Length: 320
Ligand SMILES: [Fe+2]
Image 1 (cartoon, rainbow, N blue to C red):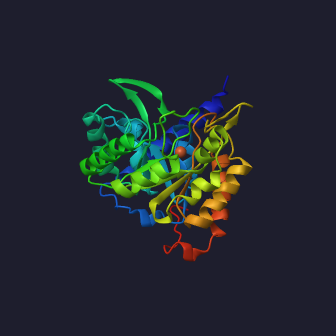
Image 2 (image 1 turned 90 degrees about the vertical axis):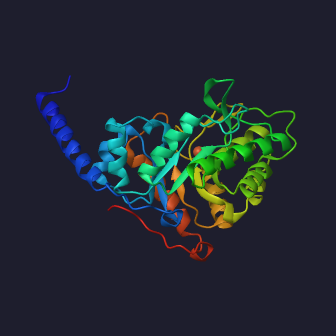
Image 3 (image 1 turned 180 degrees about the horizontal axis):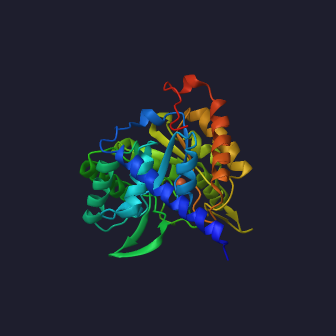
């Protein structure tokens, strides 16, 4: 049971945080628009609610923050207040998990309207979605399901991505997902499929290096071949995360430190693609903020090894 002093300190923290939120939110009346060039060559972390207080207190030097778009689809309240407070300090990346771009269902107009409203309010540097489907016939699952990689699904996804970009009036990026099975009908390599989506829809690629490694191990291909097939100018962001090894397959849990194999693949990827903005993703078994910052520091050190000439935009950080 907490002591009275502990409770008092907690109360003071609450007051402090509320004032800080109000102050930061006031600064966002007209948030400056951030372009992707503003986060070039930087490292960010996924912003999760348990870290809000520590982040506001420390304001660590990070290039950007990324949030799950759907968590801020409400009409107001504390989530948006916090988001505006952080947006006053950092460029933001909106990362969606529920648009279901790959589904044969029509795109959900209500979902798109909420995403557009959020983007217009936050003015993110990046908006991304997953190259997957999360439901069909109006029924949804809590997972990012892989697509069959065929000419037919390619045309379908390109049409959906184009519709999303037209509706938002913004370019989006699509992320490669981890998978544990493959469709027998797939006749296009995953890396060729996502590059083709980018080329023909005009969207960016959010390249999740951990997902490449997980899929390479699960499906038996060379992860470096995947990276080699991706055009440098297509990639707008890189994701790094931890996986779980069950002994039979690798599962993309986002619940551990980044593995040494993925760090090595990240270095290989940057050497090919240049200083692409990189995000540390951590969603389950969330550790203390310092652990995420430590991973971000390691990513930044690897990025510094890449010749700046591979990316013309100078590195910037925001906050302290
Ligand atoms: Fe990711």
